[in-house]
Image 1: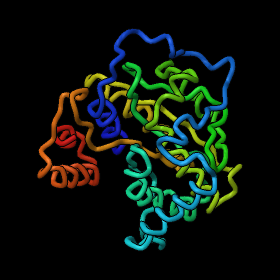
Image 2: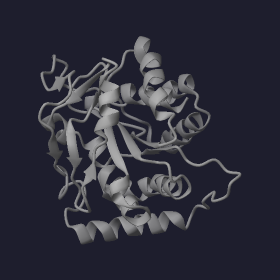
Image 3: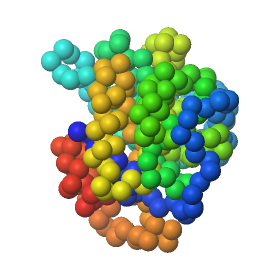
Length: 272
């Protein structure tokens, strides 16, 4: 299943520096919910509503010229997409292709009520998964409501923690998805009908990957949920103890995409 490969990616793409026990996580329902600010607006992407809207519109328009949507009853309706999470000047044109899948899904499946965003942790060490403690997610385009009912269901399993506001806002990999989600919702449907739920995927041990994959997949299998998987294919530099060979980057990216398209988790570990 796709979710199994998601957790592999969450583990292998990053190594957070802070490996000490982190008091910024909780295992109980949030007693005081917060509105998650657009913390990286103005640096990773534009903070001006009109400018950001125009930028995303261009990204989506350019992407739509190069693909043919499967708008017929014999083709499967998209259930998930994988998106990069660098600054929009780097990742935006590529992410737009993924978000056309969300647009198509919303147009063809009126039962969708929640967009789940799976994203890694770049700043805190986490050996499980954590849900956002926010009630609202702010973007320069519009605010997104959080699905607290689904959050409570996940917390009831006893296997999920809760991010506090500081951890939630510092993590860019989730935030880089929210403006695109807002843009698509504004263009396709009544924004009040669709909620979101961010889930941070930690550095899960190999022995627990299958457990968490099956657990979360049992919820994401619901046709009312569309899943956005936030994952860069490669992190490199001294922090990550990896220096790629430039002439192999395109080959490795294509190999990774082939693994994902066949849902081959084991092979994917070798490439990503």
